[in-house]
Image 1 (cartoon, rainbow, N blue to C red):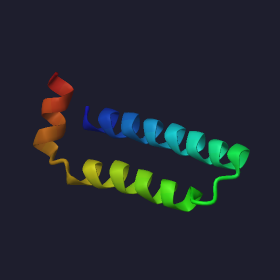
Image 2: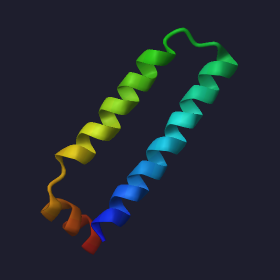
Image 3: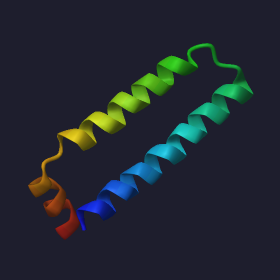
Image 4: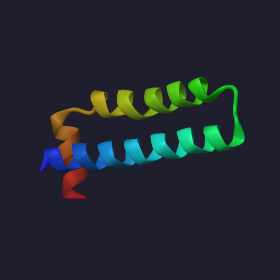
Length: 61
């Protein structure tokens, strides 16, 4: 069950990354790398900080 949560987060992360990159290309945003770095820090770090118990509680809900 924990793997299910991880894969869901991974899919959301990849979709969001694609949206940011596509938008940056179409709008020619100069600070694309900053946006991507912020997204990565907001997405990966919280997932890594979740304990197994916390993940199991999320799954139960």
